[in-house]
Image (cartoon, rainbow, N blue to C red; front, side, top):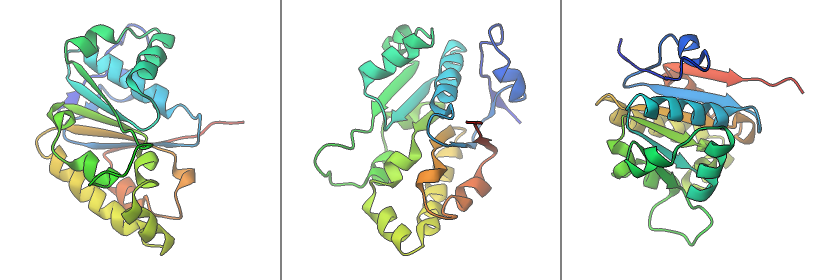
Length: 196
């Protein structure tokens, strides 16, 4: 199986811990509570991959571009050159504005420049799901897993060409077993636990 290297092997053991990188054409799921480190791990992966020359994209529901650059700087990751050279594409999923013609999930899966990247990061999936009226209505009926099955189908359509998708999600904000279809489809699944 081919992998996208996570780079930065001289500074940490993340790449080694992942067996050399993330599988190409895979779905990777990072779950954890608020402040468990999902976003930090995503930012580390993104920086390491871009340093390896891999074209990446991040869709953020939590930050705008300035906040993203500041956050990366606080981690000592210089990301500006990668953004300017198109090795990294940052997209803010601005969910505070007026309703668009598409739901948040439809917008994520619509054709766009983020799908031209080799690796697409979504931070955080629950930010899209909880603002998607189709998902929230289904979730209220106990059918959120049906929507996640559709999400898995959409993800598989994008991963067939070798694109890897990394999803960060706070599962504690979602009801019951709605994430089971996504967990089952994931080639890499991390449930990040923090002792408090």
